[in-house]
Length: 111
Image 1 (tube, rainbow, N blue to C red):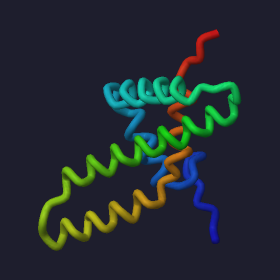
Image 2 (cartoon, helix red, strand yellow; image 1 turned 30 degrees about the vertical axis):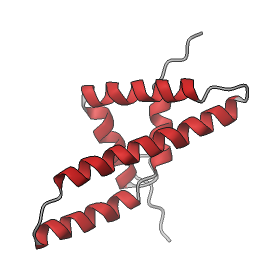
Image 3 (cartoon, rainbow, N blue to C red; image 1 turned 180 degrees about the horizontal axis):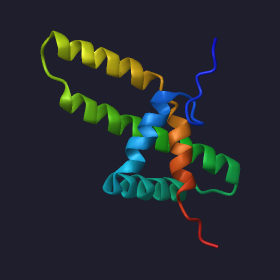
Image 4 (tube, one colour; image 1 turned 90 degrees about the vertical axis):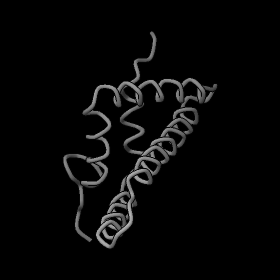
């Protein structure tokens, strides 16, 4: 199996989701705020576990957000079904944890 890394990311699909989320100011600010809130909710005495829980939680939120946005855009017709199948396949390849970790890295931790 060939190495699929793309611009330092797991693959092109993962890079693309991160690029989209971070390229639009309003979307970026929303996801950094969600990352901050998620990190705070998962802050416990074991720093490694809290961070891991935050990554999983934020990744689930991000995936659900993308799934909802995709469902809003699906229309009837053979080409729409093909586009939807290709989109579902591409999104199944996204490393959601990697995108979540990158968003959590954007959160400034108070000193």
